[in-house]
Length: 466
Ligand code: SAH
Ligand code: SF4
Ligand code: F3S
Image (cartoon, rainbow, N blue to C red; front, side):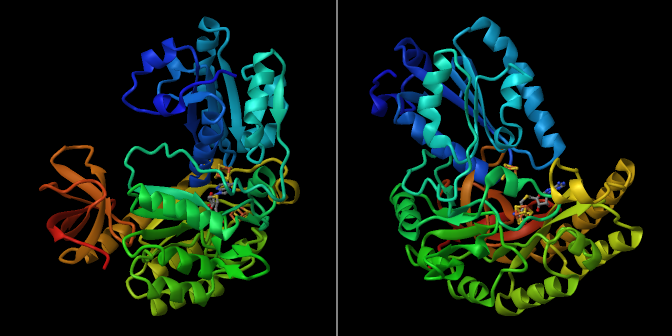
Protein backbone atom coordinates (compact mmCIF):
# COMPACT_ATOMS: atom_id res chain seq x y z
CA UNK A 1 0.00 0.00 0.00
CA UNK A 2 1.25 3.48 -0.84
CA UNK A 3 2.47 5.83 1.82
CA UNK A 4 0.83 9.21 1.45
CA UNK A 5 0.64 12.53 3.21
CA UNK A 6 -2.71 12.02 4.91
CA UNK A 7 -3.03 15.55 6.19
CA UNK A 8 -2.70 16.76 2.66
CA UNK A 9 -5.02 14.32 0.97
CA UNK A 10 -7.72 14.99 3.54
CA UNK A 11 -7.51 18.70 2.93
CA UNK A 12 -10.63 19.63 0.93
CA UNK A 13 -8.69 22.40 -0.77
CA UNK A 14 -6.46 19.89 -2.51
CA UNK A 15 -7.86 19.43 -5.98
CA UNK A 16 -9.08 15.90 -6.62
CA UNK A 17 -7.38 15.72 -10.03
CA UNK A 18 -4.14 16.64 -8.35
CA UNK A 19 -4.70 13.92 -5.77
CA UNK A 20 -5.34 11.42 -8.49
CA UNK A 21 -2.23 12.45 -10.39
CA UNK A 22 -0.21 11.82 -7.24
CA UNK A 23 -0.90 8.17 -7.74
CA UNK A 24 -2.36 7.02 -4.44
CA UNK A 25 -5.68 5.27 -4.06
CA UNK A 26 -9.06 6.91 -3.73
CA UNK A 27 -12.10 5.34 -2.13
CA UNK A 28 -15.66 6.32 -2.91
CA UNK A 29 -18.43 5.05 -0.65
CA UNK A 30 -22.16 5.08 -1.19
CA UNK A 31 -24.41 4.41 1.80
CA UNK A 32 -27.89 2.87 1.87
CA UNK A 33 -30.10 1.91 4.80
CA UNK A 34 -30.28 3.21 8.33
CA UNK A 35 -28.29 5.72 10.35
CA UNK A 36 -26.13 2.89 11.62
CA UNK A 37 -24.85 2.34 8.10
CA UNK A 38 -24.09 6.05 7.84
CA UNK A 39 -22.06 5.79 11.05
CA UNK A 40 -20.34 2.62 9.81
CA UNK A 41 -19.29 4.26 6.54
CA UNK A 42 -17.46 6.85 8.63
CA UNK A 43 -15.64 4.07 10.48
CA UNK A 44 -14.76 2.41 7.16
CA UNK A 45 -13.28 5.62 5.76
CA UNK A 46 -11.30 6.08 8.97
CA UNK A 47 -9.82 2.56 8.65
CA UNK A 48 -8.98 3.11 4.98
CA UNK A 49 -7.51 6.56 5.58
CA UNK A 50 -4.99 5.02 7.92
CA UNK A 51 -4.05 2.63 5.15
CA UNK A 52 -3.28 5.00 2.34
CA UNK A 53 -6.71 5.70 0.92
CA UNK A 54 -8.07 9.16 0.38
CA UNK A 55 -11.82 9.69 0.39
CA UNK A 56 -13.32 11.02 -2.82
CA UNK A 57 -16.84 12.25 -3.43
CA UNK A 58 -16.50 11.54 -7.14
CA UNK A 59 -16.83 7.87 -8.05
CA UNK A 60 -15.16 8.55 -11.39
CA UNK A 61 -11.94 9.26 -9.52
CA UNK A 62 -12.18 6.15 -7.36
CA UNK A 63 -9.87 3.14 -7.35
CA UNK A 64 -12.16 1.45 -4.87
CA UNK A 65 -15.94 1.83 -4.83
CA UNK A 66 -17.74 0.55 -1.75
CA UNK A 67 -21.50 0.22 -1.44
CA UNK A 68 -22.67 0.02 2.15
CA UNK A 69 -25.91 -1.89 1.79
CA UNK A 70 -29.25 -2.59 3.47
CA UNK A 71 -31.36 -5.77 3.41
CA UNK A 72 -34.35 -4.62 5.40
CA UNK A 73 -36.83 -4.86 2.50
CA UNK A 74 -36.58 -6.47 -0.91
CA UNK A 75 -36.66 -3.06 -2.57
CA UNK A 76 -33.61 -1.91 -0.64
CA UNK A 77 -31.64 -4.78 -2.17
CA UNK A 78 -33.04 -4.16 -5.66
CA UNK A 79 -31.80 -0.58 -5.57
CA UNK A 80 -28.27 -1.78 -4.85
CA UNK A 81 -28.35 -4.32 -7.69
CA UNK A 82 -29.46 -1.57 -10.07
CA UNK A 83 -26.65 0.63 -8.88
CA UNK A 84 -24.15 -2.18 -9.42
CA UNK A 85 -25.31 -2.44 -13.03
CA UNK A 86 -24.48 1.23 -13.43
CA UNK A 87 -21.00 0.73 -12.00
CA UNK A 88 -20.35 -2.21 -14.32
CA UNK A 89 -19.39 -0.02 -17.27
CA UNK A 90 -16.74 1.75 -15.16
CA UNK A 91 -14.99 -1.56 -14.68
CA UNK A 92 -14.80 -2.03 -18.43
CA UNK A 93 -12.96 1.26 -18.79
CA UNK A 94 -10.77 0.86 -15.74
CA UNK A 95 -9.61 -2.71 -15.26
CA UNK A 96 -7.96 -2.03 -11.91
CA UNK A 97 -11.11 -0.56 -10.35
CA UNK A 98 -12.29 -2.57 -7.35
CA UNK A 99 -15.92 -2.71 -6.30
CA UNK A 100 -16.99 -3.95 -2.89
CA UNK A 101 -20.30 -4.70 -1.23
CA UNK A 102 -20.21 -4.07 2.49
CA UNK A 103 -22.89 -3.98 5.21
CA UNK A 104 -26.08 -5.97 5.59
CA UNK A 105 -26.43 -7.37 2.04
CA UNK A 106 -22.85 -8.60 2.22
CA UNK A 107 -23.73 -10.41 5.43
CA UNK A 108 -26.96 -11.84 4.08
CA UNK A 109 -25.83 -12.95 0.62
CA UNK A 110 -22.18 -13.75 1.37
CA UNK A 111 -20.29 -15.59 -1.40
CA UNK A 112 -23.36 -15.50 -3.60
CA UNK A 113 -22.43 -11.91 -4.40
CA UNK A 114 -19.03 -12.99 -5.69
CA UNK A 115 -20.22 -16.09 -7.49
CA UNK A 116 -23.49 -15.10 -9.12
CA UNK A 117 -22.87 -11.58 -10.15
CA UNK A 118 -19.13 -11.44 -10.78
CA UNK A 119 -19.67 -7.75 -10.39
CA UNK A 120 -17.90 -7.31 -7.14
CA UNK A 121 -14.38 -7.96 -5.92
CA UNK A 122 -14.97 -7.62 -2.20
CA UNK A 123 -17.73 -8.72 0.18
CA UNK A 124 -17.42 -7.52 3.77
CA UNK A 125 -19.92 -7.87 6.60
CA UNK A 126 -20.56 -5.21 9.27
CA UNK A 127 -18.24 -6.74 11.85
CA UNK A 128 -15.26 -7.24 9.54
CA UNK A 129 -14.29 -3.70 8.58
CA UNK A 130 -10.93 -3.87 10.33
CA UNK A 131 -10.02 -6.48 7.76
CA UNK A 132 -10.66 -4.11 4.86
CA UNK A 133 -7.03 -3.13 4.10
CA UNK A 134 -5.96 -6.79 3.96
CA UNK A 135 -8.96 -7.72 1.84
CA UNK A 136 -8.31 -4.88 -0.59
CA UNK A 137 -4.76 -6.15 -1.04
CA UNK A 138 -6.08 -9.63 -1.69
CA UNK A 139 -8.52 -8.31 -4.27
CA UNK A 140 -5.73 -6.27 -5.90
CA UNK A 141 -3.89 -9.55 -6.32
CA UNK A 142 -6.87 -10.94 -8.21
CA UNK A 143 -8.22 -13.15 -5.44
CA UNK A 144 -11.77 -13.18 -4.13
CA UNK A 145 -11.89 -11.21 -0.94
CA UNK A 146 -14.61 -11.98 1.55
CA UNK A 147 -15.06 -11.68 5.30
CA UNK A 148 -18.56 -11.98 6.71
CA UNK A 149 -17.73 -13.22 10.19
CA UNK A 150 -19.98 -11.77 12.85
CA UNK A 151 -18.47 -10.93 16.20
CA UNK A 152 -19.76 -10.89 19.77
CA UNK A 153 -17.35 -8.14 20.77
CA UNK A 154 -16.62 -5.81 17.87
CA UNK A 155 -17.87 -2.26 18.48
CA UNK A 156 -15.09 -0.33 16.68
CA UNK A 157 -14.86 1.29 20.09
CA UNK A 158 -11.66 3.29 19.75
CA UNK A 159 -11.88 4.12 16.04
CA UNK A 160 -12.44 7.78 15.47
CA UNK A 161 -14.85 8.01 12.52
CA UNK A 162 -14.07 10.39 9.65
CA UNK A 163 -17.14 12.61 9.41
CA UNK A 164 -18.53 12.48 5.89
CA UNK A 165 -21.36 14.96 6.47
CA UNK A 166 -20.57 18.38 5.24
CA UNK A 167 -22.38 20.58 7.72
CA UNK A 168 -20.16 19.95 10.74
CA UNK A 169 -23.17 20.49 13.03
CA UNK A 170 -24.74 17.10 13.81
CA UNK A 171 -23.09 13.68 14.04
CA UNK A 172 -24.11 10.07 14.66
CA UNK A 173 -22.38 8.14 17.41
CA UNK A 174 -22.80 4.40 17.57
CA UNK A 175 -23.29 3.15 21.17
CA UNK A 176 -24.06 -0.48 20.46
CA UNK A 177 -24.27 -2.98 17.63
CA UNK A 178 -26.47 -5.92 16.68
CA UNK A 179 -29.91 -6.85 17.92
CA UNK A 180 -31.19 -9.75 20.03
CA UNK A 181 -34.89 -9.02 19.65
CA UNK A 182 -35.60 -11.38 16.78
CA UNK A 183 -38.80 -9.69 15.60
CA UNK A 184 -40.42 -12.23 13.28
CA UNK A 185 -40.14 -10.16 10.09
CA UNK A 186 -36.68 -8.68 10.54
CA UNK A 187 -33.29 -9.51 9.00
CA UNK A 188 -31.25 -7.27 11.29
CA UNK A 189 -30.38 -9.94 13.90
CA UNK A 190 -28.99 -12.05 11.03
CA UNK A 191 -27.10 -9.25 9.29
CA UNK A 192 -25.81 -7.46 12.38
CA UNK A 193 -25.39 -10.27 14.83
CA UNK A 194 -25.67 -10.29 18.61
CA UNK A 195 -26.36 -7.23 20.68
CA UNK A 196 -23.29 -5.67 22.30
CA UNK A 197 -22.60 -2.33 23.92
CA UNK A 198 -19.65 -0.05 23.32
CA UNK A 199 -17.45 0.97 26.25
CA UNK A 200 -18.84 4.22 27.71
CA UNK A 201 -15.57 6.20 27.87
CA UNK A 202 -14.90 5.55 24.19
CA UNK A 203 -18.36 6.94 23.42
CA UNK A 204 -17.87 9.98 25.63
CA UNK A 205 -14.38 10.63 24.22
CA UNK A 206 -15.70 10.54 20.69
CA UNK A 207 -18.37 13.07 21.66
CA UNK A 208 -15.84 15.32 23.42
CA UNK A 209 -13.79 15.37 20.20
CA UNK A 210 -16.92 16.34 18.27
CA UNK A 211 -17.61 19.19 20.70
CA UNK A 212 -14.03 20.43 20.26
CA UNK A 213 -14.52 20.38 16.49
CA UNK A 214 -17.59 22.58 16.88
CA UNK A 215 -20.35 19.96 16.53
CA UNK A 216 -23.59 20.96 18.27
CA UNK A 217 -25.64 17.78 18.15
CA UNK A 218 -25.09 14.06 18.54
CA UNK A 219 -27.48 11.17 17.94
CA UNK A 220 -26.69 8.06 19.98
CA UNK A 221 -27.38 5.05 17.79
CA UNK A 222 -28.43 1.48 18.36
CA UNK A 223 -31.20 -0.83 17.10
CA UNK A 224 -32.58 -0.83 20.65
CA UNK A 225 -30.81 1.83 22.70
CA UNK A 226 -32.81 0.91 25.81
CA UNK A 227 -30.84 -2.32 26.00
CA UNK A 228 -27.54 -0.43 26.30
CA UNK A 229 -25.70 -2.19 29.12
CA UNK A 230 -22.09 -1.85 30.17
CA UNK A 231 -20.58 -3.91 32.93
CA UNK A 232 -23.71 -5.75 34.05
CA UNK A 233 -25.87 -2.70 34.46
CA UNK A 234 -23.13 -0.43 35.83
CA UNK A 235 -23.97 1.93 32.98
CA UNK A 236 -27.44 1.58 31.48
CA UNK A 237 -28.96 3.76 28.76
CA UNK A 238 -30.39 6.31 31.21
CA UNK A 239 -26.95 6.76 32.78
CA UNK A 240 -25.19 7.01 29.41
CA UNK A 241 -27.71 9.58 28.24
CA UNK A 242 -27.15 11.60 31.39
CA UNK A 243 -23.36 11.42 31.07
CA UNK A 244 -23.66 12.61 27.47
CA UNK A 245 -26.00 15.45 28.42
CA UNK A 246 -23.54 16.62 31.09
CA UNK A 247 -20.64 16.94 28.62
CA UNK A 248 -21.80 20.38 27.48
CA UNK A 249 -25.03 22.33 27.94
CA UNK A 250 -24.62 23.54 24.34
CA UNK A 251 -24.64 20.05 22.88
CA UNK A 252 -27.98 18.68 21.83
CA UNK A 253 -28.42 15.00 22.46
CA UNK A 254 -30.70 12.75 20.42
CA UNK A 255 -30.96 8.97 20.32
CA UNK A 256 -32.48 6.27 18.17
CA UNK A 257 -34.11 3.75 18.35
CA UNK A 258 -36.18 3.26 21.52
CA UNK A 259 -38.03 0.01 22.04
CA UNK A 260 -41.50 0.01 23.68
CA UNK A 261 -40.85 -3.08 25.80
CA UNK A 262 -37.56 -1.81 27.19
CA UNK A 263 -37.96 1.98 27.46
CA UNK A 264 -37.92 2.76 31.20
CA UNK A 265 -39.30 5.70 33.15
CA UNK A 266 -35.73 6.28 34.31
CA UNK A 267 -34.81 7.18 30.71
CA UNK A 268 -37.86 9.44 30.42
CA UNK A 269 -36.85 11.29 33.61
CA UNK A 270 -33.36 11.93 32.22
CA UNK A 271 -34.90 13.34 29.03
CA UNK A 272 -37.15 15.59 31.10
CA UNK A 273 -34.36 16.72 33.44
CA UNK A 274 -31.84 18.00 30.89
CA UNK A 275 -32.73 20.87 28.55
CA UNK A 276 -30.17 19.68 26.03
CA UNK A 277 -31.67 16.19 25.69
CA UNK A 278 -34.11 16.61 22.81
CA UNK A 279 -37.78 16.21 23.54
CA UNK A 280 -38.35 13.69 20.82
CA UNK A 281 -38.78 9.92 20.95
CA UNK A 282 -38.94 7.58 17.98
CA UNK A 283 -40.90 4.64 19.37
CA UNK A 284 -41.75 2.19 16.58
CA UNK A 285 -44.99 0.31 17.22
CA UNK A 286 -45.36 -1.55 13.87
CA UNK A 287 -49.04 -2.40 14.39
CA UNK A 288 -51.97 -1.36 16.56
CA UNK A 289 -53.28 -4.91 16.89
CA UNK A 290 -52.10 -7.01 19.84
CA UNK A 291 -52.69 -10.17 17.81
CA UNK A 292 -50.36 -8.97 15.05
CA UNK A 293 -47.81 -7.69 17.58
CA UNK A 294 -47.75 -11.16 19.08
CA UNK A 295 -47.20 -12.75 15.66
CA UNK A 296 -44.46 -10.21 15.02
CA UNK A 297 -42.84 -11.31 18.31
CA UNK A 298 -42.56 -7.72 19.44
CA UNK A 299 -43.10 -8.68 23.07
CA UNK A 300 -45.68 -6.02 23.96
CA UNK A 301 -49.38 -5.40 23.42
CA UNK A 302 -51.35 -2.41 22.17
CA UNK A 303 -52.20 -1.58 25.80
CA UNK A 304 -48.57 -1.75 26.90
CA UNK A 305 -47.62 0.62 24.09
CA UNK A 306 -50.40 3.02 25.09
CA UNK A 307 -49.09 2.92 28.66
CA UNK A 308 -45.63 3.94 27.43
CA UNK A 309 -47.14 6.84 25.47
CA UNK A 310 -49.02 7.99 28.58
CA UNK A 311 -45.76 7.86 30.55
CA UNK A 312 -43.99 10.00 27.91
CA UNK A 313 -46.80 12.56 27.89
CA UNK A 314 -46.85 12.75 31.69
CA UNK A 315 -43.10 12.85 32.34
CA UNK A 316 -42.04 14.94 29.31
CA UNK A 317 -44.80 17.40 28.41
CA UNK A 318 -44.43 18.65 24.82
CA UNK A 319 -42.38 15.65 23.73
CA UNK A 320 -42.76 14.77 20.05
CA UNK A 321 -43.33 11.12 19.22
CA UNK A 322 -42.82 9.30 15.93
CA UNK A 323 -43.22 5.68 14.92
CA UNK A 324 -42.68 2.96 12.32
CA UNK A 325 -45.49 0.87 10.82
CA UNK A 326 -45.67 -2.24 8.69
CA UNK A 327 -48.88 -2.85 6.74
CA UNK A 328 -50.08 -6.23 5.53
CA UNK A 329 -48.07 -8.46 7.86
CA UNK A 330 -49.01 -12.16 7.72
CA UNK A 331 -52.74 -12.71 8.36
CA UNK A 332 -53.46 -9.01 9.01
CA UNK A 333 -57.22 -8.49 8.69
CA UNK A 334 -59.17 -5.31 8.05
CA UNK A 335 -59.95 -5.33 11.77
CA UNK A 336 -56.23 -5.40 12.67
CA UNK A 337 -55.60 -2.61 10.18
CA UNK A 338 -58.40 -0.52 11.74
CA UNK A 339 -56.71 -0.98 15.10
CA UNK A 340 -53.53 0.47 13.63
CA UNK A 341 -55.46 3.49 12.35
CA UNK A 342 -57.20 4.01 15.68
CA UNK A 343 -53.94 3.75 17.61
CA UNK A 344 -52.39 6.36 15.31
CA UNK A 345 -55.31 8.71 16.03
CA UNK A 346 -55.13 8.02 19.75
CA UNK A 347 -51.41 8.79 19.99
CA UNK A 348 -51.46 11.61 17.42
CA UNK A 349 -47.97 10.79 16.13
CA UNK A 350 -46.01 13.82 14.92
CA UNK A 351 -44.35 11.76 12.22
CA UNK A 352 -44.12 8.16 11.01
CA UNK A 353 -42.12 5.92 8.70
CA UNK A 354 -44.49 3.49 7.00
CA UNK A 355 -43.78 0.35 4.97
CA UNK A 356 -45.48 -2.53 3.21
CA UNK A 357 -44.50 -5.88 4.69
CA UNK A 358 -41.68 -7.42 2.67
CA UNK A 359 -40.96 -11.07 3.40
CA UNK A 360 -37.28 -11.65 4.12
CA UNK A 361 -35.59 -15.01 3.57
CA UNK A 362 -34.86 -17.11 6.67
CA UNK A 363 -36.71 -14.92 9.13
CA UNK A 364 -39.19 -16.56 11.50
CA UNK A 365 -42.10 -15.09 9.52
CA UNK A 366 -40.76 -16.47 6.26
CA UNK A 367 -40.26 -19.92 7.76
CA UNK A 368 -43.43 -20.21 9.83
CA UNK A 369 -46.06 -17.73 8.68
CA UNK A 370 -47.83 -17.18 5.42
CA UNK A 371 -47.31 -13.90 3.55
CA UNK A 372 -50.98 -13.93 2.64
CA UNK A 373 -52.05 -10.31 2.28
CA UNK A 374 -52.06 -9.52 -1.46
CA UNK A 375 -49.54 -6.90 -2.61
CA UNK A 376 -52.19 -4.43 -3.79
CA UNK A 377 -54.02 -4.74 -0.48
CA UNK A 378 -50.78 -4.07 1.43
CA UNK A 379 -50.39 -1.00 -0.78
CA UNK A 380 -53.95 0.15 -0.18
CA UNK A 381 -53.54 -0.12 3.59
CA UNK A 382 -50.22 1.68 3.33
CA UNK A 383 -51.82 4.59 1.44
CA UNK A 384 -54.47 4.78 4.13
CA UNK A 385 -52.02 5.08 7.00
CA UNK A 386 -49.87 7.56 5.03
CA UNK A 387 -52.93 9.69 4.44
CA UNK A 388 -53.85 9.60 8.13
CA UNK A 389 -50.28 10.37 9.19
CA UNK A 390 -50.20 13.39 6.85
CA UNK A 391 -53.32 14.70 8.57
CA UNK A 392 -51.83 14.08 12.04
CA UNK A 393 -48.52 15.73 11.05
CA UNK A 394 -50.35 18.76 9.69
CA UNK A 395 -52.40 19.04 12.88
CA UNK A 396 -49.28 18.73 15.03
CA UNK A 397 -47.51 21.41 12.96
CA UNK A 398 -50.52 23.74 13.01
CA UNK A 399 -50.45 23.49 16.80
CA UNK A 400 -46.97 25.01 16.73
CA UNK A 401 -48.01 28.19 14.88
CA UNK A 402 -47.35 31.14 17.17
CA UNK A 403 -44.86 29.20 19.34
CA UNK A 404 -41.17 30.10 19.57
CA UNK A 405 -38.47 27.41 19.48
CA UNK A 406 -34.72 27.18 19.82
CA UNK A 407 -33.59 26.01 16.42
CA UNK A 408 -30.17 24.59 15.67
CA UNK A 409 -29.28 25.76 12.17
CA UNK A 410 -28.10 22.91 9.94
CA UNK A 411 -27.80 24.55 6.53
CA UNK A 412 -29.36 26.54 3.74
CA UNK A 413 -32.84 25.87 2.44
CA UNK A 414 -32.84 23.98 -0.85
CA UNK A 415 -35.04 26.61 -2.44
CA UNK A 416 -33.19 29.75 -1.49
CA UNK A 417 -29.82 30.81 -0.11
CA UNK A 418 -31.64 33.55 1.81
CA UNK A 419 -33.33 30.98 3.99
CA UNK A 420 -31.88 28.63 6.55
CA UNK A 421 -33.21 25.38 7.89
CA UNK A 422 -32.74 23.68 11.20
CA UNK A 423 -34.59 21.57 13.73
CA UNK A 424 -36.22 22.27 17.03
CA UNK A 425 -35.85 20.00 20.01
CA UNK A 426 -38.92 18.06 18.80
CA UNK A 427 -37.01 17.21 15.60
CA UNK A 428 -39.28 19.29 13.40
CA UNK A 429 -37.66 21.02 10.43
CA UNK A 430 -38.10 24.80 10.45
CA UNK A 431 -37.23 27.07 7.51
CA UNK A 432 -36.68 30.76 8.26
CA UNK A 433 -35.07 33.99 7.08
CA UNK A 434 -31.29 33.96 7.12
CA UNK A 435 -30.47 37.39 8.61
CA UNK A 436 -26.82 36.90 9.47
CA UNK A 437 -27.15 33.50 11.10
CA UNK A 438 -25.00 30.54 10.16
CA UNK A 439 -25.13 26.75 10.32
CA UNK A 440 -24.25 25.74 13.88
CA UNK A 441 -26.00 28.75 15.49
CA UNK A 442 -28.91 28.38 17.87
CA UNK A 443 -31.64 30.81 16.82
CA UNK A 444 -34.99 31.58 18.46
CA UNK A 445 -37.59 31.18 15.73
CA UNK A 446 -41.29 31.95 15.87
CA UNK A 447 -43.45 29.62 13.77
CA UNK A 448 -45.71 31.57 11.40
CA UNK A 449 -46.90 28.92 8.94
CA UNK A 450 -46.57 25.24 8.11
CA UNK A 451 -47.19 22.33 5.77
CA UNK A 452 -47.53 18.75 6.97
CA UNK A 453 -43.78 18.32 6.50
CA UNK A 454 -42.22 21.65 7.47
CA UNK A 455 -42.62 24.61 9.78
CA UNK A 456 -41.99 28.10 8.42
CA UNK A 457 -40.80 30.72 10.85
CA UNK A 458 -39.15 34.05 11.45
CA UNK A 459 -35.94 34.45 13.39
CA UNK A 460 -36.40 36.42 16.62
CA UNK A 461 -32.88 36.49 18.03
CA UNK A 462 -29.88 34.43 18.89
CA UNK A 463 -31.12 31.50 20.94
CA UNK A 464 -29.33 29.11 23.20
CA UNK A 465 -29.82 26.09 25.28
CA UNK A 466 -28.76 27.68 28.54
N1 SAH B 1 -34.69 -1.44 15.53
C1 SAH B 1 -35.76 -0.68 15.09
C2 SAH B 1 -36.08 -0.76 13.63
C3 SAH B 1 -35.07 -1.08 12.62
S1 SAH B 1 -35.62 -1.39 11.00
C4 SAH B 1 -36.99 -1.12 15.84
O1 SAH B 1 -37.16 -2.23 16.19
O2 SAH B 1 -37.83 -0.31 16.04
C5 SAH B 1 -36.63 0.01 10.64
C6 SAH B 1 -38.03 -0.32 10.33
O3 SAH B 1 -38.13 -1.05 9.14
C7 SAH B 1 -38.76 -1.17 11.34
O4 SAH B 1 -39.17 -0.45 12.45
C8 SAH B 1 -39.91 -1.71 10.54
O5 SAH B 1 -41.00 -0.83 10.58
C9 SAH B 1 -39.36 -1.75 9.13
N2 SAH B 1 -39.12 -3.14 8.70
C10 SAH B 1 -38.25 -4.02 9.24
N3 SAH B 1 -38.36 -5.21 8.60
C11 SAH B 1 -39.30 -5.07 7.65
C12 SAH B 1 -39.88 -5.95 6.67
N4 SAH B 1 -39.50 -7.21 6.56
N5 SAH B 1 -40.85 -5.44 5.85
C13 SAH B 1 -41.24 -4.17 5.97
N6 SAH B 1 -40.75 -3.31 6.86
C14 SAH B 1 -39.78 -3.74 7.70
FE1 SF4 C 1 -35.36 -5.71 13.83
FE2 SF4 C 1 -36.85 -5.95 15.98
FE3 SF4 C 1 -34.21 -5.68 16.23
FE4 SF4 C 1 -35.71 -3.64 15.43
S1 SF4 C 1 -35.79 -4.62 17.42
S2 SF4 C 1 -33.78 -4.32 14.53
S3 SF4 C 1 -37.28 -4.61 14.20
S4 SF4 C 1 -35.29 -7.42 15.32
FE1 F3S D 1 -30.81 -1.94 6.72
FE2 F3S D 1 -28.92 -3.18 8.01
FE3 F3S D 1 -29.82 -0.88 8.90
S1 F3S D 1 -30.67 -4.12 7.08
S2 F3S D 1 -31.93 -0.89 8.26
S3 F3S D 1 -28.77 -1.19 7.01
S4 F3S D 1 -29.11 -2.56 10.13
